[in-house]
Length: 412
Image 1 (cartoon, rainbow, N blue to C red):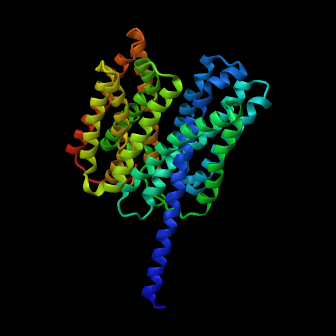
Image 2: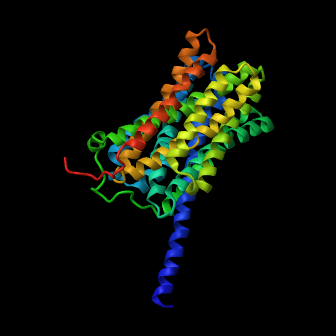
Image 3: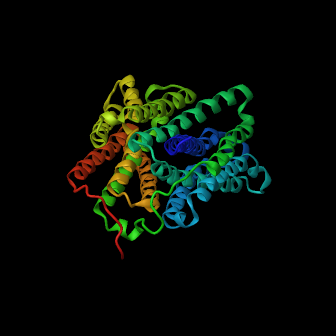
């Protein structure tokens, strides 16, 4: 075998190995979807079994997202020092242990609520690490079209969200919701398996050691702050509709909660996943910023349809299409940021993830507050939620007019 053939064989082997990295990150996003969306399916069961007030049950998602925010801050400062491989393997361990703990810890501790919250914090740490690390790990791989790959990667959160909702509902129906603990253990098998994937797949550094921008340098960059605003608007646009979709469909159409959970969040997840797969397949034919501006305008129309239409079918269509419109926002912002600020490194991805989580916390809260002040009319809250995709479009237009020269680290 001559030198050219040896190099060719090595290149083929390398590509196959990086596909293994990509598959591990796919499963990572599925794990994150499980961590974020399994517990809400059993809120009422936890309330009934452990006599926990609903006000305390409501603290579960708040604790989950707040823990993720803390992990984002931690990653911005320390992940480069710890190393990507150790951190991403730890993410799968935390996720698996947290899900298993959710099944057994409430019974083992004197306070069931304390057991639940400890479990939530554990798997939220894993989810936060996944959120920060999978995107830069894939960005560092030598794939030809990073924007397409990033969009396809993030679609697996949607499929994980859909899968955990539908499969869990089927398992609850088949074996009874009293067996939810074993369903939690079943879902823990995915991160347990993925520990091996991340331990053995090739992982490259996004930026060489010492060459990534510091947090202070990022804060000095106008491009970075535009990216932060895009992430806040992306998170708020997505979750303002996603978290209120079931309640809106239930109040607007008068269907049962089970049907509403499937008709609202599940269809939202499907259309969001379709958008990400679509751009993942055909992204090279569409300029990303233009696609995101079009998506933002479509999202605004969807919010208007859902909030102002007196026709229940049109309102539901607005909810469902909103999933498609927000699909590109989060991964698209990460792709644009990586291209505009190529030396942003892990700190940039962590801070942008934090901004997205912040938007995902602020948006639904504001929708709920506006709805309450309007006499519990969710339509008014959702109409207010339309401000987030509108702002996203404004900042994308600002970004197009900003100088797109790449930013490199400089000494402090």
